[in-house]
Length: 310
Image 1 (cartoon, helix red, strand yellow):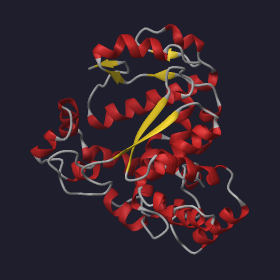
Image 2 (cartoon, helix red, strand yellow; image 1 turned 30 degrees about the vertical axis):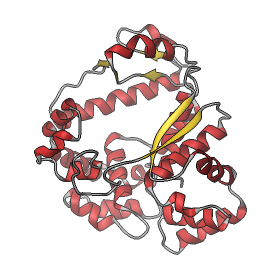
Image 3 (cartoon, rainbow, N blue to C red; image 1 turned 90 degrees about the horizontal axis):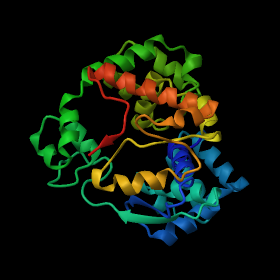
């Protein structure tokens, strides 16, 4: 089992590294400078036997993956403080992915301001995503997000989302659940036993010292979208594509030509790049389209599958 951040970072860096014009990756972090992340990543590229043993011991004792991973890192001489915050973890995974690909991309850590990852209190500016979700009916959040994001947040049908998650869990088999990242070791049976409960109760009852509530939420969402580990690994191993979701109008003439120099096809409105996709890329694109259809269904909207100029 690997950190979900590692999977996300691997795919992101693989795509970014295919664009010659991309020289630097900026990411938010709670602490640390470029050298801190580079020095921390080196011992994690090839995990030693000692690292693996301490990690396994931590998991066997019931500790969470994050805590066990940090303990193994510290046992091998690393600064575990860098792994205690979620954005630092993702930044470290970006750094590891860059090193593993021998990419020329440099990292630019930027210290986060405002609310922390799980800070549920609204700030005047820069509230956390957790605070925004918790206070969805508070007009103050309009000051924390762009107008079009605020409109989507107000229109989001949370009840429909919960119903979708429950329905998909109810009809999924334990074997199907085991194909989801992080769902194994009996957790699939636990989730199936809770399938008839409200989503909030499912998360509360399945959360434990070893399995965080965030992990349970990810599993439920991945199950509803049929995002399976074996398929993700296949997509990550193949030739993919670049699909821009949105960009500013005044930057379009600069960004799109730069992305078009990628080794991967650039898919935009009316693009002929679809004919250049590999079979793996086509399967991945179909999965993308399915996820958009699910979003439209649960929110009773019609978000078009096309590039948005803002």
